Image (cartoon, rainbow, N blue to C red; front, side, top):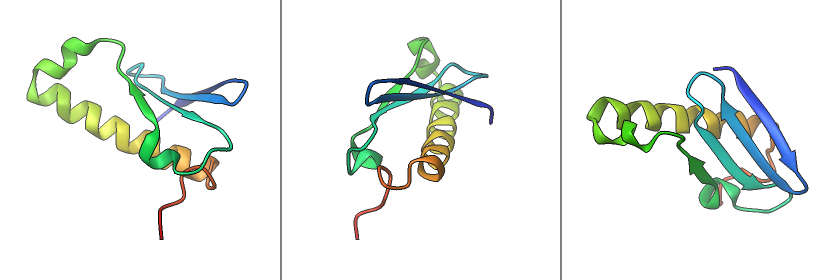
Length: 78
């Protein structure tokens, strides 16, 4: 998965280049694993089971990518 990271102050968006799906969260904030927002540029993809599966797969990949680069923000609750 090729990703692009964009920062605007403490706001961070990690976007999957191939699909345009992005994960938005606050840098420096805790529990971002649970409060991050998913951006889907074409919501029509959610009208099919395949599309929902793709969004789910990309979402999981983005979360894993974010957890590697932002471990404090994406730490799991213990």
